[in-house]
Each structure stands twice: as structure tokens, then as C-alpha cells.
Length: 94
Image (cartoon, rainbow, N blue to C red; front, top):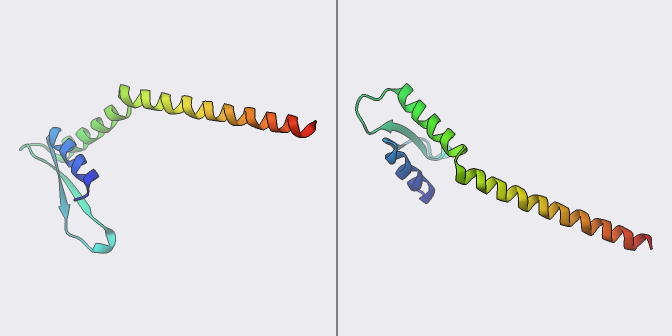
């Protein structure tokens, strides 16, 4: 199992879920089934857990901070590129 898959499997276990690798045609690559480690959980409960887990990760504070940092960095780079273009166009017109 690849390292990222092991990490995901560990995170799923914390949520009461388990990822099992299925044996299929090698052309398709690895296929995983997600099942519950706790008895009495239906497929709809399982789907909701995965959905909720994805939504909370998507809107987490650390993810929002990372997006804000990346946005600021991209804007700063764009501003520097725009400034260098105006400088080069001014020197070319002289």
C-alpha cells in the first residue's frame, strides 16, 4: 500500500472506517472498498461520515489559512511581474 494510502487508512480508522484493497484487473490499478469497523453502520451512515469528514476538512481553519497565504503570495508575485513589465516598457520607450 502506498504511503499516502496508508495515511488515509489511518485517518479513516480514527473515524471508525476501514479501507480494504480489492483484487481486480491490474490495468485499472488498485481499487479500495471503504467499510465500517463498527457493527450496525449502514451504507448511508458510511456515506454521510465520508461527506462530513470531507466538508470539515475543506472548511478547516488551517486549510483557510493556507489558502490565504497562497493567495497573498500569488498576488505579490503578480504585482512584481507587473512592476517589472512596466519598468522594462519604460526603459524600452526611452
